[in-house]
Image (cartoon, rainbow, N blue to C red; front, side):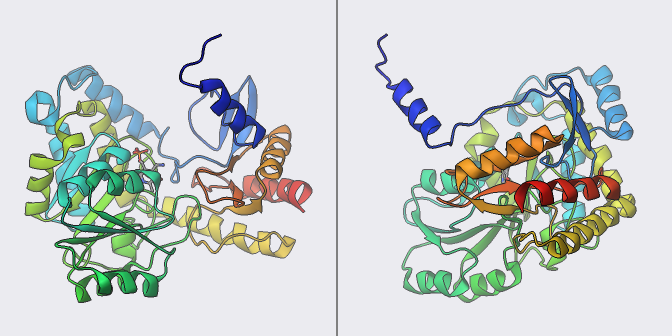
Length: 386
Ligand code: PMP
């Protein structure tokens, strides 16, 4: 068969390197337990960190607004897709994270592409942590700015690059919680460095928003950084909030710049109004149900402590992302399969999502889990990994 795009060769190479990716089809809602192929599994790979994706208040908000406003938003925000639900969500998000304004994007991926490209271009430079999320790396490359990757969380390496820079504008971009490692960027020190070198700091708080900080407002809250110190704050609504979409928060001028210039904002359909309403209901829970966040924090502490006692070596993370480093991709896949046989859904994350020889089990904890379920996970890990 003719194959002018050479698809078969590329797919076969992926297979032979044990890097082939496969989807699983869920037959139930997100939660501590999910159904796949008619069988129940304990779910330790979702980003629904607070267990809100299937919360009755969130579902009720969604269905009620779907009844009133229908399903599709009908157009982009600038044409006629911006409903009062979107507007209210933007206002409440800005208030929650202590910024002047927030602008909604349809996904986090698009938010990152949109912001970086609206802020820097050919005469400028973008400095990115090596382990930044793919969407941030793509954003930096697409922007045409001089693209600099500094060593993971290495401030000296970043500073050396900033010192040498003769570029017009300088933008430092990091994940505030690294998605495959779970560790935090030192945002306080990064903000100080940015100030010293007249650069702007952007944080992607996809995995911190709703979860980190005293109030749940995320990494800016955790590090107590105001709009001056951290002028570009991106958060997603599909993880801790259990909904869908993303936002960028900052000054009045930043918000207007995005609305005028961010192409993935301008040229795409707004999220459904019912989804915005669901996010508002989630936000309300995040703001008022402190116990939910505390339960998650206590599960994280418990899991780390018990894993250490068992002799399992976790990565240095205080967040809900608790990866177990395996190294070899084939072995990581075999362990993930063995866990599946025991009734646990945990993905093996392999290159190119993570660097070569650093395949890992990306274990994620959620407020939806009970301590007993975490105990079951620990027992299974001890059987399969040690
Ligand atoms: N940033 C980070 C750090 C992420 O982990 C993700 C999602 N995996 C995104 C951005 C993209 O967000 P979304 O899923 O809303 O496109």
